[in-house]
Amino acid sequence: MSRPVYFDNNGTTALHPKVLQAMLPYLSEQQGNATSRHIYGRSARNAIDQAREQVADAVGAHTSQVIFTCGGTEADNLAITGVAGALGKGRIAISSIEHPAVSRPAEALRWQGWELDLIACNQHGQVEKSSFVAILENRPDIVSVMLANNETGVIQDVAALGELARQHKAYMHTDAVQALGKLDLNFTDLNVHAMSLSSHKINGPQGAGALILDKRIDIQPLLYGGGQERGLRSGSENIAAIVGFGTACHLLATEVRTHRNKLVGLREHLEHGLCQLGAIIFGAEAERLPNTSFFAFEGIDGETMVMALDKQGFAIASGSACSSDSKEPSHVLLAMGIPPDIARGAIRVSLGNDNELHEINAFLQTLERELARLRKLTAVAV
Ligand code: PLP
Image (cartoon, rainbow, N blue to C red; front, side, top):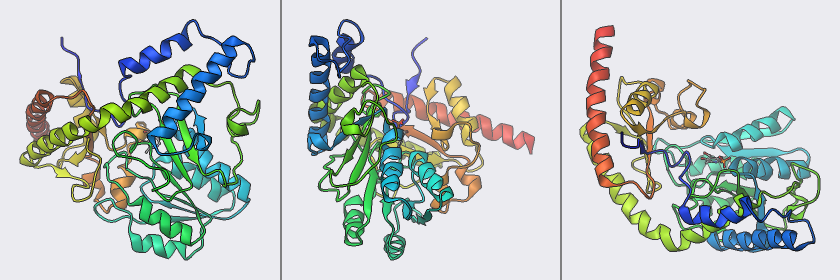
C-alpha cells in the first residue's frame, strides 16, 4: 500500500534530511551540557551559538534578541505572561482569531484582574483596523496580533498595526509561527517588540522555538533555575532540537523561495477543483499563506469528512485542528461571522514542499466520491 498523502503541514512538517543530519551528533556522541566548561560543554555551547545566528539571520534579528524556548506555545506564553508579570496589572488587547497559545494566557491574565479587549476581524479574516484603533484608545499595555492565521492562512498587516500600537506606547507582540518559512520575515520591519517562532513548522524538529524580543522590554521568566537564555528560560538546553531549528532556519534562505512559487500553483489548482465541487473557501479574498486552503461544503460535517478522507489515504485537518478534542466550530470562522453550521464543515489542506500535482488531482477525485457518498447517507438519514 502506498503512503497516505500528507496535507497537514500547518499542523507539523516532516524533518528535513539535512536537519536530521545536523542533529544526529547531538543525539549520539556529543552529549555535553552547554553550561559545562569542558570540551563537550564548549562544543554544545558553540552549537547553540551557531543556531542562534541562523535563527537571527532568518528573521533579520540580532543574536541578542533570540530567546530559545521549547516551541511556539512557550514563546507566546513568555511574550504575554512574562511581560504582564513585569508590568503587574494592566490591560491587554488581542485579536479574536489568535491561537490558544496567545488567547489562553490572555484569558488567564483576565482572571488575575487584567482588562482584556478582543480586536474584531472582518468576513475575510483580516483584523478590522477600526476596531484596532478604537481599542488602542483604551490604552492597552500589551497588544498581540498574529502574522498569519493557522486555519485560514490569512496574513495581517502587522507592520501597520505595530506602528499604531507604538504610537500609543503599547508593547506589541506577533505570533509568526505560521509565517516563518512561508513569508519573508524581518523583525525590525514588523514594528513589533516581540515575535514567536516554532521549529516544527519549517521542517525542523518538534520541541524548539524562539521568542525574538526587543532587549529594552522588561520581562519576567516563566521558569526559574540555572539562568540559561539570559535568565529568561532556565533549564539545560535541548541542544539537538536547537541545532535542528537553526539548520531549518538556515535552509529557508536557500530552499524556500522556489517552493513558495510551486505551492501557490498547487493551491490555485486545488481551489479551482474545490470551487467546481461547490466548496466555500474561507479567506479567499484576503492575502493568504501560499500553502493553506480552508473550506467547507454545506451540509457536510468537517470531522466526518476528515475521517472519511483519512480512510482513503489523505491526512488533512478539520476546523478545530489545534484542539482536536473540541467539537466546537472554529473560533476563527465564528469571529469572521461564518454561521456555525457552515463552520462545523470546515476542513483544511495545508500543503508542504514535497506535495505534487498528482496528489492534488487524486485528492479532488476522492473528495468528489466521498462528498457524493456522505450526501447520500445524509439524505437517507433525513
Ligand atoms: N501559534 C500558532 C499560530 C500555531 O499554529 C501553533 C501551532 O500549531 C502554535 C502557536 C504553537 O506552536 P508549538 O506547536 O511549537 O507549540
